[in-house]
Amino acid sequence: MAKIVFEEPDGTERAIDIASGQSIMEGAVRNGIVGIDADCGGACSCATCMVYVPEDWLARLPAKDSTEQSMLEFCPHVQANSRLSCQIQVSDALDGLRLKVPQSQQ
Image (cartoon, rainbow, N blue to C red; front, side, top):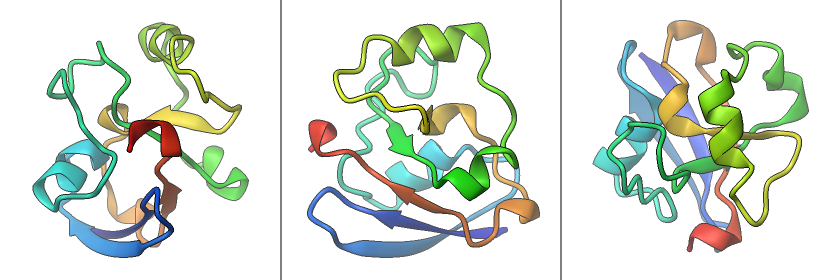
């Protein structure tokens, strides 16, 4: 289990526990994180679960595959540190990860 901290679009910070093996998106949806809509349910086909990852955490995450990269190209506010939370599986190593939900998903 890992504690993941989300900064919602209005600046509110919420820390939630997500079980290892779940995606960050699954945990966010179950806990009502504002701005994580997950319209496709985690199939990596909508990009409504985009988050910004702090630079110091990027190297700790698995690399983006071509499907995720393609979906991110359609996001209006994509940045170099953008990831789809449906594509990040939780492990104990992610305990303390802080993510920002972009305004565009509010």
